[in-house]
Image 1 (cartoon, rainbow, N blue to C red):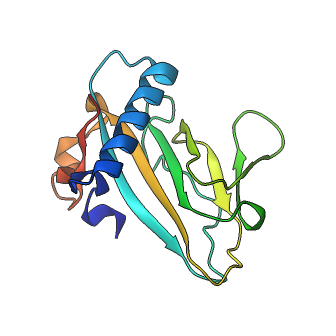
Image 2 (cartoon, rainbow, N blue to C red; image 1 turned 90 degrees about the horizontal axis):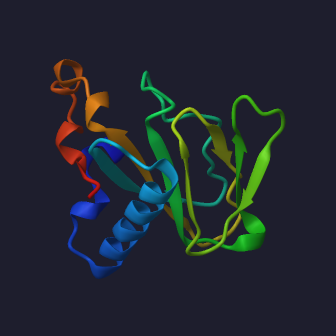
Length: 152
């Protein structure tokens, strides 16, 4: 249901702190020259669940659209994320560690490992899109258009 809400619209102090961390990292890494917008959602994985290989590009420009995740409640030995970043050969493994914030381009192929713990694996995922990247004719019909907030 990631397209149904934006986690950062909920007025909790810890969400605001994470928003600021994402904003600061994005400005440091991307050095944006135009306004960008952020959408975030919660991921909760139960035993045996995982997310297979995917990107967040979905027709977007992988050079100007970003995505990322934050580990809120994970066990370091039991979980990881694999990235295949073009044009590099091979796979990058990122071990899950509480409070780790990861950001990359939307075109980066990635997947999560299968969750094996009895307690849930909790992460927050997000997309960062430039204002120029919105196709308002197409997005106007999509329910998530109003779930992006400015990344100031």
